[in-house]
Image (cartoon, rainbow, N blue to C red; front, side, top):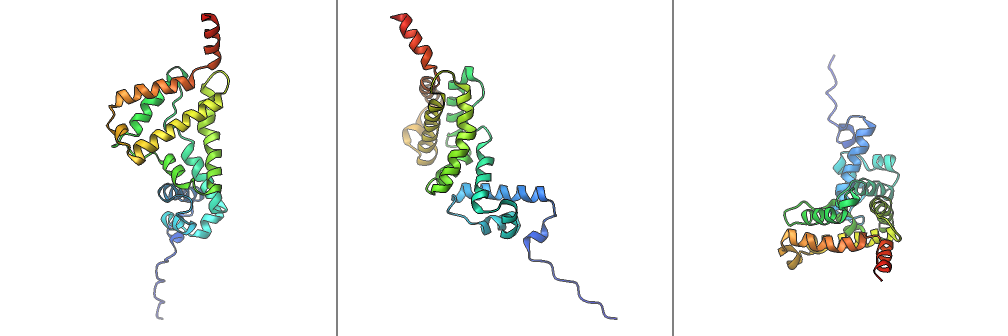
Length: 211
């Protein structure tokens, strides 16, 4: 009796991946973070993300529901880790300034959360999702390190400064900032951060005592 020829290999990328729900979900999320960081929210679709992850678009939607929900997960993954803001309130100004200078040096790797933010900001919904992520993770963490009134406002101003320096130095390539000596630039930034991080109530009390 003649045997049937073997079935041709499947061309479905999902069939090549072991049926491990956790590994599959992580692969999709890694692919999404990379894609949104490179192309922004409007520059990539679910099919491209699925192809890079080795799965089908249907499987992406099964795990994440929609492109918007997948983007929200990618933002969570990108903004939860510490990139520039440190943890020690005693040396916060100096540490943040130093890390910012080092991470925006020409030879340094690009900071993925900032690229994701820059490229996805034009879309109103993705901008809202990023705002929520920034406030929930970075701004809340930084504000928690500050004392006195207006902690969240001062934290927001500091994050604006960080984003501006990153944009001008790493993306635009401002000549003066690129040619600045690292230690000197860090000292100047430290002075500015110190103004933002300093407790305004203590400054008022000191002014009253001096008077």
